[in-house]
Image (cartoon, rainbow over all chains, first blue to last red; front, side):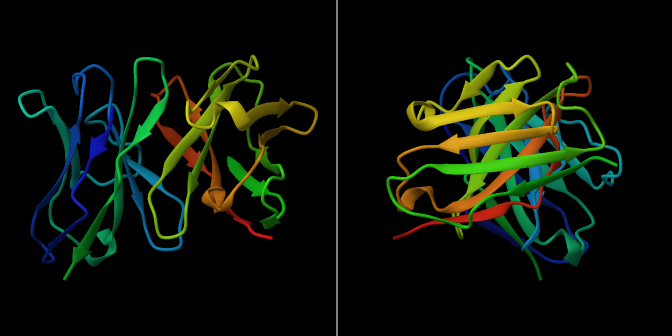
Length: 110
Length: 121
């Protein structure tokens, strides 16, 4: 299956933005979804795992959810800060435990 | 403090084999709670999952790379290795190693800084 993300989104500081990740086949609920943040020139870091869990140290401005009706996962960032400007990737596993990444979404905070 | 450090040749000729190592500190690669993944990112593009290896040596590879790929463990050096054969320009990418701690989820909780490999004659 494929995970499809919008190429880019933009929003102003202090606002809320949601990035979607649509699964092409199979249920979005069948395997957990992770979200990774990658700032320019840096390695990715996890902001959400297991659909909606935050690793220690990730602020609660970051939240994740899944929606079976649209077969998609979403990453929501509230109270946007300029430091949130980055690329965001969703990731899941297929039925044979192969990893699958979405194409990535560039978030601009301006 | 867990650290992962990738290393290897920055330039590989087409048709040759790309070999990288990931030195792990702050944890044993043979611990049954971890598995070790490789991910790559072509310049200016997105992430691509390559494969992973369990502490037992069992592996799971991307179907698109499986015929050219080998991931292994060197417990004496606490290193994870990647070998990708018959490379082409399409294999040019930053290669990352990363860890999954199965006791807290299946996400990649520690990443190396990545190493750029260019395939060119």
